[in-house]
Amino acid sequence: MRLHREGFTIMITTGLVLLALNLFAYYYLLSDNSTAILLLAIISLILFVLIVQFFRIPNRLLTTGETQVVAPADGKVVVIEETTEGEYFKDRRRQVSIFMSPLNVHVNRNPITGTVRYFKYFPGKYLVAWHPKSSTENERTTVVVEAANGTSILFRQIAGAVARRIIWYVKEGQPVKQGEEFGFIKFGSRVDVFLPLDAEIKVNIGDVTKGGVTVIAELPS
Image (tube, rainbow, N blue to C red; front, top):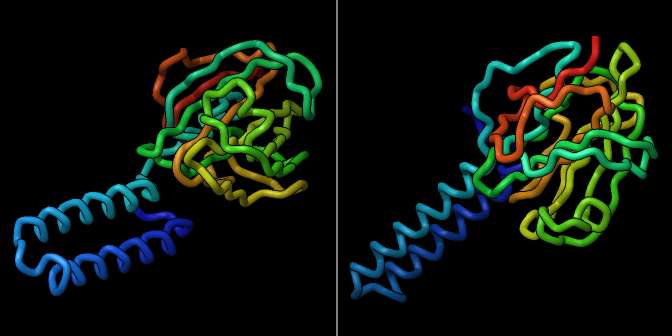
């Protein structure tokens, strides 16, 4: 396991603030109360560990396959439905949505190999990620990747009530590889994937996914 570069500043800052707080409490604020000092140290350690675990990147054997669509994120499947995708395709698609809690790994991975044909960032609100309007009103990005066989997949990072910053590493015209990072969302959010109607969905509502590993759909060969 390793730690994501997006968390270095937050982890160092948090560590220094907690260290300063504990030193101040030990020498001045709580110098005569050993129980309170110990309790503060334990709480600080737990908080720091929670921050660090959020930015972890576990070692994984990634799934690859030309007709397989892998999960772009760790989390829980909260939506599987046929809907109209109105931003890029403007037609009917199968939508699979994965909710990411603050305890999940938050690396976002390309669901297929191909070329980025469309990318757009939208500033917006921070409604809870499961709110019906979060996919159209929250801060978000939209990425469309076209595979070698011409099939296109749209996936969208959506910030939640806690997440306040979306990171992306792709741009239009860029070739991308299945399982590689395309972005990161800090502290909880959602990723929507829009698939062709003839895609065979391989997950169910409530399933737990692993980014880059879990196959969420099979495309026609």
